[in-house]
Image 1: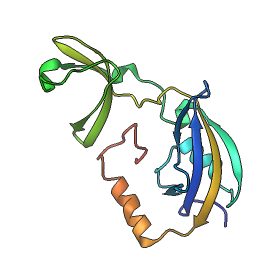
Image 2 (image 1 turned 180 degrees about the vertical axis):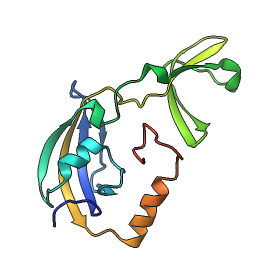
Image 3 (image 1 turned 90 degrees about the vertical axis):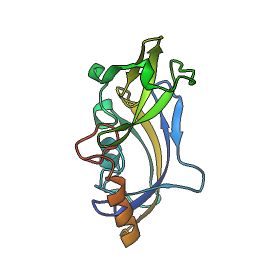
Image 4 (image 1 turned 90 degrees about the horizontal axis):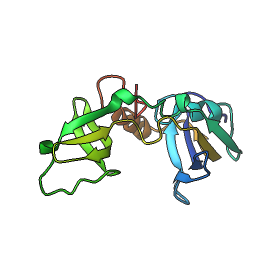
Amino acid sequence: MKIAEGKFVSIEYTLKLDSAEVVDASEPGEPLGFVCGSGQIIAGLEQQLEGRQVGESFTAAVEAADGYGERDEGLIEEIPRKNFPADVDIQAGMTFTARGHGGPVSFNVVSVDDEKVVADFNHSLAGKRLHFNVKIIEVREPTAEELEAMQEDHSCCEHTCSGCGAH
């Protein structure tokens, strides 16, 4: 069976940047499972998976536009320091998750002073070319439970969001 829209797929993968730094990988014996065409993985990788079969291994380069998008300087915002707990020692490089209008939103702290926290709402991999080493473990029809879980994955936001790929 070939990978196509609507099929359940599981892959083992390693994700590297241009620098060869490994930034993500599936755990040994725990492949990543998803329904093809559902937006559960980045579009650039999904496109390179289509038509492939169980047992195939390949490398794929995914440009930023087909991965987590280009960096958007408009997603860097100042947040009043008073909006954070006073007892938290906020440092540049920290990651926080806040409640947004459509659900949880993560951001990285760029800088902080007594008055404000400069927050970057871009995905940490935005603007970067991604290099995947992939092995296809399974291709089949999804179960009812997997289809239900796919629907739950998309409940995070009401509108198009740049991070999760749900819409």
